[in-house]
Amino acid sequence: MNSRRQTLAIATILFSTTVCADTTIEFSVGEAGSAQTRPQIAYIKDGALFVKGAGGDPQIDLLFKRERSSITIINHGERSYMNFDEQKISELSDRAQGMMSMVQKQLADNLANLPPDQAARMKEMMGNFGVPAGGAPPPPKKELIKRGFMTINNMKCQQIDLLSNSQKVAQLCVADPSELNLPGDDYQTIKAMQAFGERLSQKASKISGQFAGSVPDFSGIQIEGLPVEMKSFSDPVSSVMTVTKVVGGVGNAAMAVPDGYNPRQLPSLPAM
Image (tube, rainbow, N blue to C red):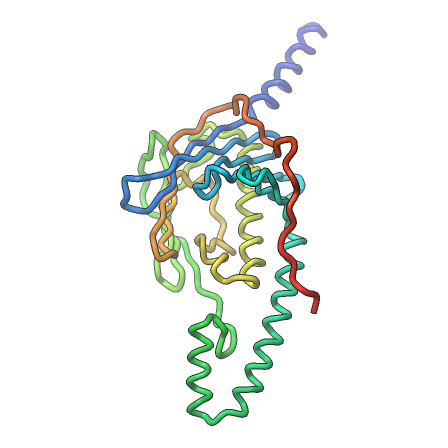
C-alpha cells in the first residue's frame, strides 16, 4: 500500500470513529399498566447527552457534559438555564445537614424535659413529619436477581430484578451495547451520566429524602449494559420507561443552550 492509500485509510478510520459515535435513542415513559405514554428522545454526541422534554415536560431539556461531570437544565418557558455539578450539590447538602443537626439537637433537648408519655407522642409526630425520632436506620440490603432473556422492540435483553431488603423495587431488561449497535464512546457517556445521577441522588438525599426516593437506588450495584426497559415500584405510582428505537446520528439536533437564555442559580442556604 503506497503512502497516499495509507493516508486515506487512516483518515477513513478516524472519520468513521468520530462520525459514528453519535446516537439517537427514542423511548417512552408513563405509568405501569397504562396505555398512555409520553414519547421522549435523547441525543448522544462527543461526550454529551441531551434529553428533550426531560421528566415529560416539553418545556424542559437536560444537557449532561461527561468531561465536566455537570448537568444543565434548560427551561424554554422561562428562556433560562441552570448549571449544577457535584460541588454545588455538596455545598447545599452539607449546609442542609448542619441545619438538620441543629434542629434535631434542639428537639432532643426539648424532649428530655417532657414527661415520658408526652415525649413518646412527640417522637411519633416528628416521625410523621419526616424528622427522625431516633438514630439513622441501617442502609437497605440490595441485591440483583437475573432472570431469563426476552425481546423488546427487536432488542434482546436480560430481565433483572432489583431488591431492597428482599422487596422488589425495580425491574429492568438490560441489553448489551453491541446488541443495539451503540458506539463505545456513547455508551461511556450514558454510564457516566448514570454514575453522576447516582452520586447526585446520594448527596441530594441530605436536602430532601423525596428526591433520592424518586428513582430506584442502584448505589453500590454494577449493571453492565443499557436498560431498554425499567419499571420502578418505589413510588406510590409505578412507572415504566421503554426504549423504542436506537439509531445512529443526531440529525440537526442543537445540543446546547439557545442564544439569549438567562442563567439561573440554585437556591442557597445560609452558612452554618
